[in-house]
Length: 489
Image (tube, rainbow, N blue to C red; front, side, top):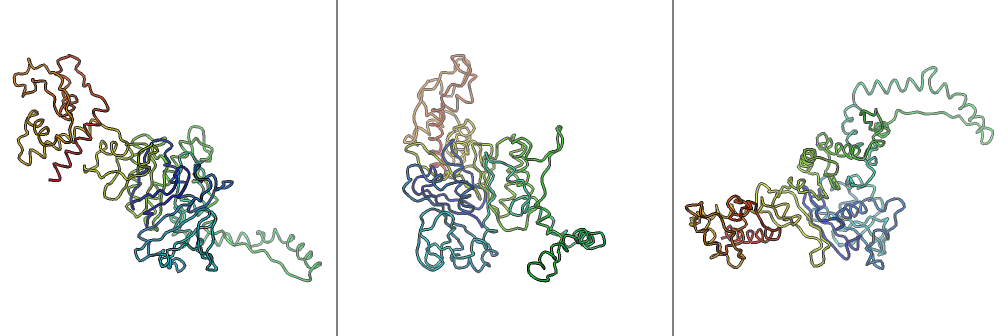
């Protein structure tokens, strides 16, 4: 079960309607600073949890849309059998096995009396499968809360919020799962007996409270009539035992509650909880994990360890959302299960778009960096160039020399290429210069390839590859067009 579609209306920096499509695996959300990456997490948070303490709905409303409504809508796909077994939810699950929820201000719903009204932000509405209208039936939120409870880890949040042991927290859920077998063990039964002895035996808690009980009985009798009182004490449930726990960290400064440690260590512990969950909680219903800037405070190997754990989580039907600026994080993109959403606030660019299909498998970090962040790399350029060359050779084209390959490109793909003057080489020292001694204008990709690979034979003795970022990017654009033609024919 996963969020397949998210719709925002006038939510923070997203004016009007913006839609996002997600996959069941890992969903990378990328873009420059201040484009709204974290706002997507806040939207999901608002949908399921409502406003935060002391927060006003106007704080979520787009600045240019203050007179309009604001809402967040999410569609779940592949609804699990466990969720479908909840009778209150069954009218809202479609034949396509989807379920849509909505929360916002001034949105139309059908109330419990069957009348249409405008709902406020405290109402979580469910879309009926038969009518398409949104309803808020009595008791449905409590019945479904366990199934729709994403774990959200913000980059700038107080990490201690994720370190308590309450049953609704990720760590509490994990510890409760691991402690489940203990409840049926002889050891726990011994504890129960000892607890009862502590309460009931001579000299136990009941004896110590006997005078208090008698005094209260007399006070009640004088006001109400003769009544006997008794105190009852039950052994705490495992939830109660666990939720009172805390994480302690010990270093050279001694042992302290984790909340008293630095932000870097706190965040590392939070992410360690996520990794532990991926390792131990293998038989629970699917969840969503939203991690803001997973690269924060982490060196590359630690990032790899975290992403490996998230890969395992996603393979277990848990959906992952990652806000990131890091191409290194995107190395873990799996084109079969994952998606990349690219955000932009540049005038003239599409506000939200999905990353173009990748051509290389396994995933090339150069291609990811280019298509997600718009940053050209030498690695991507040379890989495209050599892949095209090898494909043409495999197809029987006579492009074995640099000059023949350049001529083939000029003759067959002139609609895609620009020409650039080839920098003179030390041709006097090269007996067979393969036609390059003409210093002619050549396809940009061929000039770039030589600038990158052969700085050692330049006539101007600079022995450096001289090209601009713009040249590199333009050449990559042209190579992608040529690649498509070559591999599609």
